[in-house]
Image (cartoon, rainbow, N blue to C red; front, side):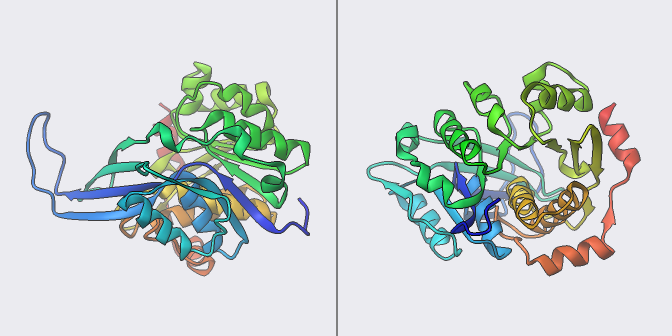
Length: 317
């Protein structure tokens, strides 16, 4: 990574504005429950990861599209106050911003998401120039506008810039992205869906052997994260916290992992730090509500309670 780049990390991908409804418990199918709280909150995979990187002190740039409705205004105002460079964020006219309705179970903090993204927010590959990517030491992408992020990843590979990716579902054409990825960190469901292999370790081996990325990893929610690097597996357990809302935990994990790559952390330290930042985000409401300084993550690492390896073994079975 170039030490003279203008930015430490540039992100290309999604943002969203969430309507969060806290409910006392999930009803049975067809049932009713009153909601306790309604919160309108900015989020989105790459945008939130970039906000996390900025909060940790990295020079950060976001490339994406935002609608011109009320939800777009909320997202835009939030990003403007985050320290993230927005020079190549497009405000699309007569276009609603990506939105999500998120139900949060008060008893566990777990969330269920219903989302919508209009085609008018699509990022075209031609809108991303080499200069927008080569200005950074690291590129972070998701998978939604696949041709655009594939284009960005190719530019990064051509210029020796490492690429991290956050992918949670199967996207058409994603096979054109994976060969240019250095750090693949997926949801727990993606490896099996992509490879057809139910065992998560075997699925990560298949992904890494097929596409040659340096690190093939998956987040495991309350169980932590698992990565394969250098022919070996590294497991990092999650931290036990008073969880109010899991929304955005994965996005913050990715932002903290990007920070770890830029800072040159070893993989075990990177996963542990990302787990700590994700856990802290769960202690507050909203996708970015609990983004914390590095000192608080270090304190949690030093004194926090972790899940056990036996719980991970139970997860595998």
